[in-house]
Image (tube, rainbow, N blue to C red; front, top):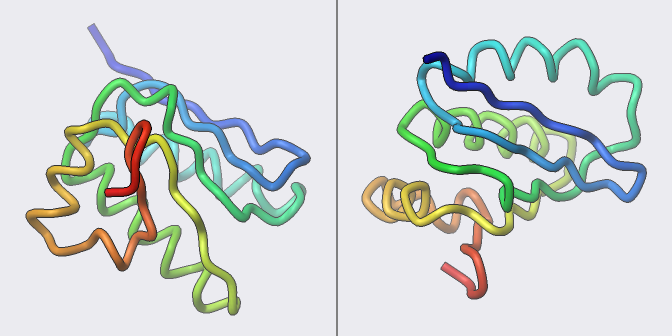
Amino acid sequence: MTESCAFAAGSDGVARVTGALTFETVARLYRDMEKRLPGTEPIEAVDLDGVSGADSAGLALLLEWQARQRKRGRELTITNAPDSLLRLARLSEAIDALNISGRGERA
């Protein structure tokens, strides 16, 4: 069974991601976002409440999004990260670089 992942960019500046942020899903998600984001309002936050899990590919995608924002003089706030993603971010010492928090409390 193939996993899926999707995002929706809201008019409130929040992108909501759902599904699994994994090696199997992030390449397609990245391509989809590259096509759709230029026509949307600027994204200030990414809400991961709908994400069921993540691996190192999901972490890499979020680091890429954050790096792109910083090049534009902006920073993303990433909220509601699943525990699997927070563990990876801690192990990679990427908590501060990501500006990420978990579900219910700051990482």
